[in-house]
Length: 485
Image 1 (cartoon, rainbow, N blue to C red):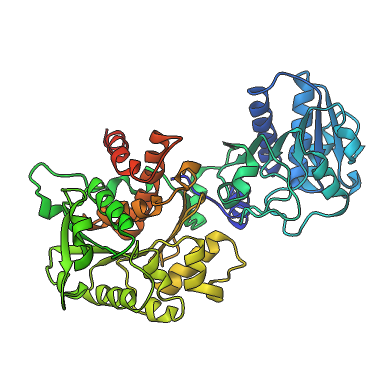
Image 2: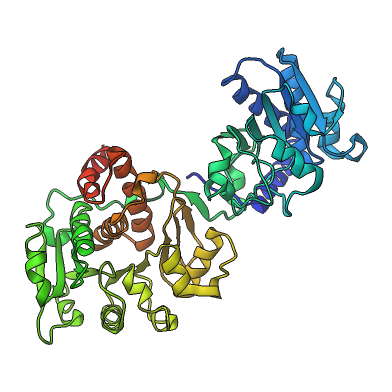
């Protein structure tokens, strides 16, 4: 697993390691050596400015400056604050620095094309101002290597506290933090190197970390691969509720569910739209809801074990009633788009009916309309999604370039692999279809959501520039082949 550790969890990891007998100074020395190794692997020696802050991040900077100097690099070091205020391991690192300590000032950046940003680490809690802000602003346009996080970046939320530099390289230690994965932090970190500095993996057992980067390691064992003696009914029968007007959304989702492995997929649609849906993929069953036929009656066939509602369904009372009927039927439900917005005026009417087999897949607008201030809209994306999952009792997939998936039990995943080409009409419908297909085959909603998001991004990478939503289901074949192989 690629765990993401909060600032508090990382502090505990350091403390547990030191308590086990590893001196803090040894960890700082290893951290500085790791930064120097990353620098020397990417650049030849040339003039470098090392900017040190008043805490342990600055102590790392002193080690970096000393080791670069010993390797023949021309180095200048500046300290924000005074030498006399440094304490502990940072003071020891400063004692080992053989060169002059200059006062931090933007002038030190002149003639130094490489800047080592060791001002503030992930634990910064207030916006940069005064001289610190001026120095960070002066880094603009220069090649910056940040230690831990770019100074001014909040390690838990990925938010910028006033100002932060654009790093070309960020070297962090043991594990990444949420701020390395959430936007805008991820875009400011540049290349991220996670260095081993001697903290043993066993300390994770004492942290209770519940946030990870999305990868197949999380859900690969649950992938519902077809069995030699299997048949289509054993692979689930998924239903997609089709709208009467925006028919493309349900068609995209239904083909995506088939590509994800569902044995059968039915589009349930208004009778008036039957000719449109029937002219689509011949692999998809189309069932018109004529007269008094309802979602509840369609789901009366117990082989139909999962349903997607929302894409192209329309906002209003009819969609609300269909969602409520599907939830009452007790089958696995994926709710997206209009299925969520239809409850914007009465969110409790939906949230109080959800159950553990439900997956919600909102974008930011839909999320805000459904959950509002109840989950702390000013908080970071990870916290908001966790709060929404806790409130709803369902898995919540909050879409975006930094998609977050959270379960009611507190587990959360951040996806960092989605390319920008996915920002196109219909791609969210395909994502919902992928998740539906996996859930129909018996995959748990949380793992299915994580797998669907990852496969969605990998399919988009195979297609590249020019991607449209119709391309994604077909590209999934290559993704699944590589995953299985």
